Image (tube, rainbow, N blue to C red):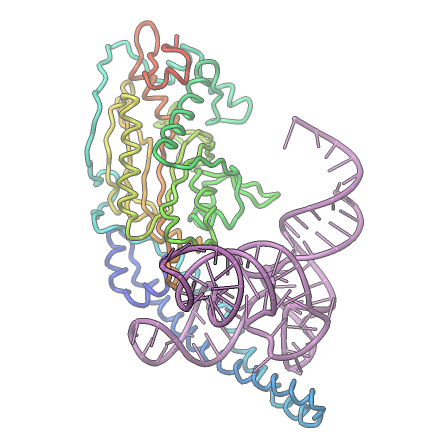
Length: 424
RNA sequence: GGAGAGAUGGCAGAGUGGUCGAAUGCGGCGGUCUCGAAAACCGUUGUCCCGCUUCCGCGGGAUCGGGGGUUCGAAUCCCCCUCUCUCCGCCA
């Protein structure tokens, strides 16, 4: 969420920036400023009265000590009216605070200046591409046929155990999945990320901290009995490690990497256009998360993009990097680069990574701050994250692009992890 | 799941109604001493909000797990919630 200070100081700037995201903030901003002004006024009065109250109470204490009971009683009389006034003021304050917060959390994050205005995916900007497009003969199969042919991923069995979108990985399919996870983790650790293994269910505070709650409640599986949520991404637990934390500037940037299963209800987005591994309710993902100094967060973002690019390159997948336009960006992001890989048999680009800088938007929710050495003032950190990588669509592309008559070739970098060179 | 104990500043740990934002120790920071360092000594050291100053800072309010209550006054008393620990049970 945006800070109230920024809203006070740069109301028009915010409204203008949010138009890039096709968000009309005018009304909300005016309401916020109005609530904020009255809130501050009331609080100033309440604080002044409270100050009087505290002074009188101290005086009563002194009188009691010197056994001036009559004077103490007289002083008490003075407090009753004061107390009522304070009460009536603070009673007004509580709903105002709540209202203010409810309005502020409706405002999306401001887009970075490089972000172009646009309505949706069609307005995104291709930054660069790489890799060699596979040459497949006319007999090539889409991955949902390949997984059956080689019996490596079983959707029907998943339906029996759980439901649609919960596949069972079998044999070389399971091994390939594990190989990819280990490869991605190892590459991350080599690049200086610290491996963490967080819980995959989180509480409500964590859901709020990274911005999934309250708005995107329907996208997460909810363990109602305990008030927990299954994580939609490792971003949630890993970023929330730094909730309510004040870091030293020297500790930045913090670089974490985590493998977790991810759970998404994908309510309302299921349909014929998402077959096979293209969209699942449970999938595996390795995520990189950074906590950065605000002055260096875009360098961090570039490094993360380079890291992800290195991964898709090493798997020999044709890829392209897309900068999302304002209309296609998430609520919480300032700048997002999507990675897409080419899926040879489906003949379409599949999104396999999304790398974002949230600047201080999540940090403000998380109350994750840092202190410059020797300075008293705390400042909000910048948070970033990116998939490195999400597995199912990588698997889909690998299966389709690498299919041959004798089987599916495993990329060289994975062979030490799989122990086999071909799926047949 | 049953019974009991507890939750205080970065950490340890006092404090059971009246200058308590909180003793003391450790740690951190600054200084004295030193060629330098250690030790010793002196000082300083939480966070949030509001106002003034808008560079250092000053004043007010809040904050002792969270919420509510009693009281002129709550870290201290009462109620609810959450969490932690110990014992028992269960268990990968």
